[in-house]
Image (tube, rainbow, N blue to C red; front, top):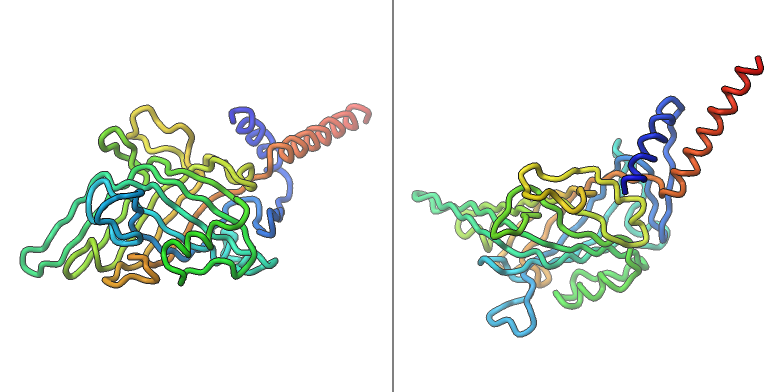
Amino acid sequence: MNFRKSLMAATLGIASTLPLAASAITIDGIDFDIGAIFETVNLFEGRQCAVGEPNCTPGGPIDNIGQSLQGVGYVTGIFAQNGGALWEDGDNGRELTLYFYDYVAEYIDVDTDPFTLAQEAKIYFSGGRVDIYSQAAGTFDPTAGVAGSIASATSGSLFLSLEGSGIGGVISGRKITLLSESSSGSDALTTGSVTGNGLLDVTGGAAAAFFDTNSFGCANDLAGGCPDDADKKFESIGSLTVNGTNGWAFSGTGIVRDVAVPEPTSLALLGAGLAGAGLSARRRRKAA
């Protein structure tokens, strides 16, 4: 990783003096450009139940410490920083789906207005894993219930695997990786509007070399730092409803921000090419 950072810095330093142009990359039918990009996603999420766990409804709301969160979704589009579409759901006959799981509720803070009884709640999660798949367009079925939608979201080839990265704060020795905030006129843990934010670190997948960029750092207050700086930052907004949506307590949308870079091999070739061009120019100047 250190070699790659050094190579990137040297190469980008040389390249900064040259005209820049977007460089399109296609991995398993998914198109994106080198540089800062963002993805829009549709999300469905709720409780994750362990085998044999009593009184647990898969997809239900998180309302107690120690409960786990899971969910599914799909990418509606990948966009350049200026908003131009690079890839949209169904392009090249492909879709990008995601399954996230193993986020554990470490602490729940609920404030109730004594006069209106309106509530605001914060849930602090640790852990978390996200698997993103490229598969044939139309495979994912969010209406198939919790088990069915998970199965339809995970039948393709692994595009990226990620794990939660610390956003700040440690509870019971575990780093907080996701913060969920909700507000409601009654019970903020089961109904109302919800926002979420967190960080992710790339750990594998076909596109890992392009997105393992450490672009979003590590929270300063985390004891011992992070094993690796975060590669993606996400924000979500949506709602909790009494009856849920297709078996999921929460449904909403999100934005994922990241920076794509060339593969290390491409960086090395680019650096060698630029260095060679510089050497050739110096030789010409000496000859003159």
